[in-house]
Length: 77
Image (cartoon, rainbow, N blue to C red):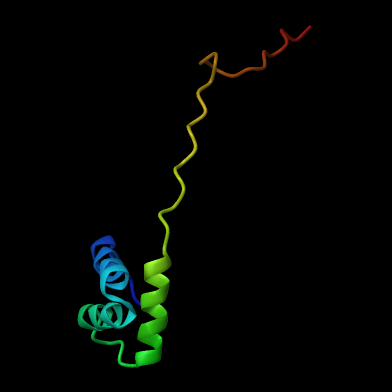
């Protein structure tokens, strides 16, 4: 297991899209010398090249009436 920074991923994606799969594998193996198996490097390069950015976070919920809460407590009759 290894962690890929956004800078590493961008370099691998660029190599993949501009120069091809073999260039992406070479870029990956230069940045991560622990990956020695060519087939695993190919799978990792393909995975990194196909990553999409996560969807934008939904807008936070803003209460219409800020305060203690929406429900009022009964006076205790």
